[in-house]
Image 1 (cartoon, rainbow, N blue to C red):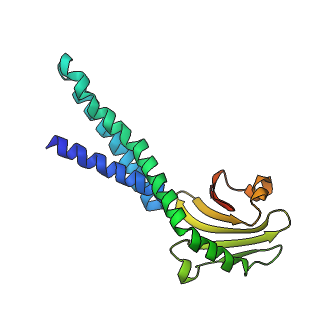
Image 2 (cartoon, one colour):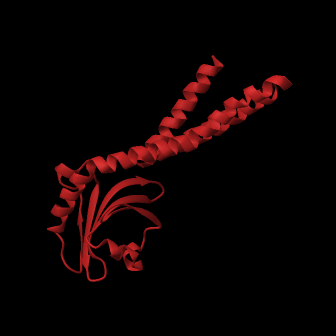
Image 3 (cartoon, rainbow, N blue to C red):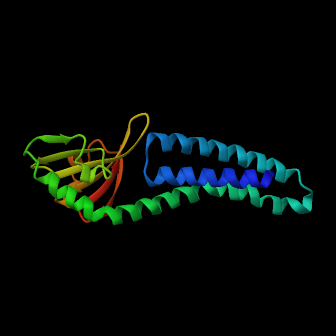
Amino acid sequence: MAKLIEYALSLACLSSIAAFAARPTALKQLLAMGAFLAAGLLFLICLGWALTREKGRRLRAAIVPAAVLAVVPIGIELGHAIRDWQFQRDLPRYQAAAAWASTLAVPGETVTVLPPPAAYADLTYGVHITQNETCGLVVDFFWGGGFPVKHTVRRYIADPTSMERKPCREGWRRGRQRAEGWFELAD
């Protein structure tokens, strides 16, 4: 029975961490934090159990806590693989959404669209469109979130080299290029 509980908790931890890494939301972040704490507790219990085994059986018993510990990085990697696959799958729709958004651009201003049109509602919960001389056309698709105040955007930028300029990255602590002209940024 203990093994079944251990496997179920490990699978739940792996799933919740992978789900949060795939598409961050406040609820998934809360579940992933709970899963992380559960994995830590499960690790300590399994480690204590392994240390109480006879000397010859400790090494074999240590495999269990090591496997529990591996759940966190495996969940993160699995979630990132799912996120990459989903972006590549949705890229044509993002490109169509960027083309639509570019028609709303007003030079020198930021246009906010909340909520987005129904055709793009599953891709974003809000769109910011900016066009200026420094960065050119920039379309931010707000895609993921967390708490206390965390946003993840998928950004289309007409001139990808402008992302090297500090004003074009301002407000975003980290990010990476996803495709030509496409970046994923987080605050």
